Image (cartoon, one colour):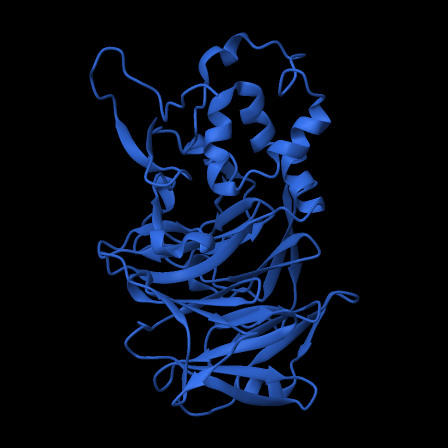
Amino acid sequence: MQSCKIGPSNPKGTRTNMEPIYSELENSVETESTLDNDQSVEVEDTGSGGNSEMDPEVSPLIPGLPDDIALFCLARVPRRYHVLLKCVSRKWRDLVCGDEWYSYRKKHHLQESWIYALGRDKSEQLCCYVLDPTRLKRGWKPILGLPHRCIRRKGVGFEVLGKKLFLFGGCGWIEDATNEVYCYDAAMNKWNQAASLVVPRCYCVSEVLDEKIFAIGGVGPNSSNLPSWETYNTGTRSWTLHEKPNIFPDIEDSIVLDGKIHICGGSSPLSSLVSAFVFEPSSSTWQPAASELVSGWHGPAVVVHGTLYVLDQSSGTRLMMWQKDIREWVAVGRLSPLLTKPPCRLVAVGNNIFIIGKGLSTVVFNVENARNMDGVLVSTSIPKSISDDDVISCKAITI
């Protein structure tokens, strides 16, 4: 294999608006021109790979092997080395970034999930980080190059569909709610502007159901309530608007449980009652959620193998589990205050729940091997980063 060069060189020896960018390869840094045009803000491995420009289209992936056998071999390379594969040749780069690679790894259960966190730093700018769960000691790595137009917005939606991450909507101190959408392809390490929302939204929640993104509720221009939701279809690459009077504006969290989207609002100071609704896909209607489930939904939630977990942060951090067979909430255990830095967000990878707090402090808890020691859950932790960023949302991209 030829040597790998991360990022383009500058033959004149001058710096032309270049900045370091996170690469999937551990401890490697590449450079990429920062484009002024937000229509295509790239964070991409160039991967020229020696003589790749002269490779004919008909050349095999691996000389002497049929392409299907070569794919069988290459697709089993761990994800952290995919950046190296993209450096070998243009054909290898196109393969690793393409849909055939993604579909093959998915079909043969070769996919790996990495966690992506959207945060906000001390200067009130959005920031993005990635974590390889198989290399926890390596910690979180920043992804630079977020589209400039949205880095100071608040209330930005954050959702994953397939191998792509979407940032949508948001607003600012002097900027009304917007309908702009940006898409990050995790395989290509590239940002692009995507199809806009039908209605400008800020502080909406989102979920994925039936291979569609749901952007639900929020506030619109002039802080108007939006009793509606939109769905994004990857086939048509467009959003479709749906309106419903009982979609309330102050949605705090959402989950997909038993094939249905659940949304939950916050309780008011004068009442402990919580508004919550369930989306019925068969009829495309929203119905009130079961009061027993809502009664314990106080904090960020995540679903692991069909079981709902909620992190109650009202007094310390306590993990709760919804037992739907007896329709009751059960305490799993408390988390050490020395490890968690509320407010926290949750994301699940396999049997593990990742509890991610301020400064990207991370606690990993395995639901199958739950153990308590003096009432405190036994878990693995990742030290917080140097920064003190607030974590807004966390999602997993599986490739």
